Length: 634
Image (cartoon, rainbow, N blue to C red; front, top):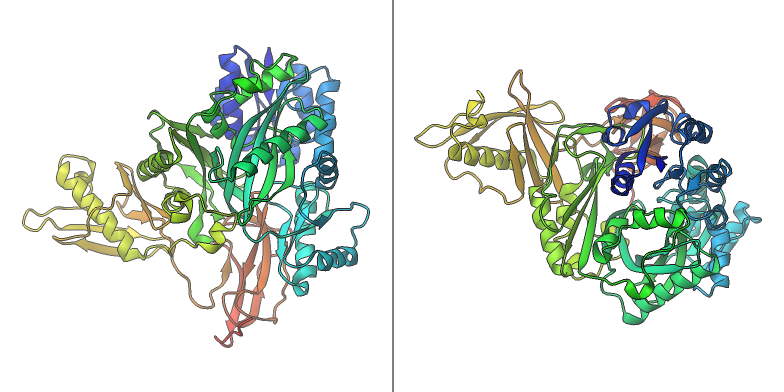
């Protein structure tokens, strides 16, 4: 059997692992930027199908189908994202005589619209969040009136969407029109559909979901709950199974409701029913169905012992699931963190470039690494910023959290900035330890500011001093900018931060204690501190150590591009007066919109880009003339 994975990165590698174990021939399709990606090398057969534009490669249905025909493919697995929930693509695959590894196209179509899904869920007896969902009545006035009837705050949500796109919270009528425009724009750009649902916004929500697995012979299983409440910008960061700290009646209700919905639509492969749970009273409400394999499926695999990809392949090929509901057992607890190339200290700005070093103790018992690559690789601006998923499992949740913290203390990924330090900070917070979290956790619990350069550098020097004293003949001893003098063990180094500033730093006897959250290799030094991951590496020519600690700009600095992007909207013109926080530019990168704001009160002096134009990281976009530091409080 030949299996083509119509996807890339981590999920392609994950599917290949199971397929090869089952003796399937694996086929990768890839775009030019992925030419040297790990998943391309993992496959038995690899074919380049286009350039960097998604429409020319991973979203080009005809190109993918043509490769299926040429290579005599037996089955297509869509992974997640891209075409995984595209009913037209699923039908085209089947019409070409190829097995579709996913639920049947009619199910995908029925659940693809949140408006239609709400109606089906209501018919199946699932509780719904009070709201307005009418595809035929989408004018601004009707939606605004619906919001007033529901009562503020309300949530605007793209009907065709997912992945956190096309969502806005509106706290008052005065902000409704602006938020609706933003949600519509993002929904249209992401899904080609700007229909919007208006719902009551639950103040203290948890995001809990139930894994389903069905086959074409009428069997349907629920494989327990997962909690996905730790999110930023409506995209999940940490997931765990089973969902902790649920009232017994809530957990039973969630699992029963998921099965009822699945049975009502004859669900026949992997899928997830997502719910919002009100922390204050345990009430739960239907959210949506993801008609595909979820990113977070490994935590369910870890606690059930089931291979969900294998079950998908069995179901897709017409076989009966090898387990019944009575066979499904849950053992222990599993937690997954998504390791992204992004800078939490810079509003989660995505990072691009090479990951030169990775060290994860994934051979340790209970530690699993599902990575886009295992040793080194590139993160480009063309796709999302996820490097890997780190999954830790243990007999109970407390042990799993402790083990995860220990693993994060020794994680070594760099020199690209990642969110591993943020994860280390999150798992140490009392609300997480007590499972008293909501989806607003990262809004209400802001990690400490990045350590100042002196603090970071002194820690780096302490580490280097300790390492050099313990391994005098090691690589640190050979670096010309680091020396130990026998009398006072002084260490001298030169660091360069992101602003390009060189600093000579000294560490005398009594230097800061070596921190517990650090790691070291001959070519890289990493420190996880206060929710931030900081790394230093030597430049061979000058032996200057370059650090990625974020620097603070002035009160009214230029607006510069935080990463490569495309300019979507410019809401100001030269000469406009602005205050701190006013939107001056909207850019798009890695399928997400980012609003850039004025840093203070002043006048727009110049706009150096145009709508639709591409910009590079650190490129100056908007300049100002400062007029007054005073800003009014709203």
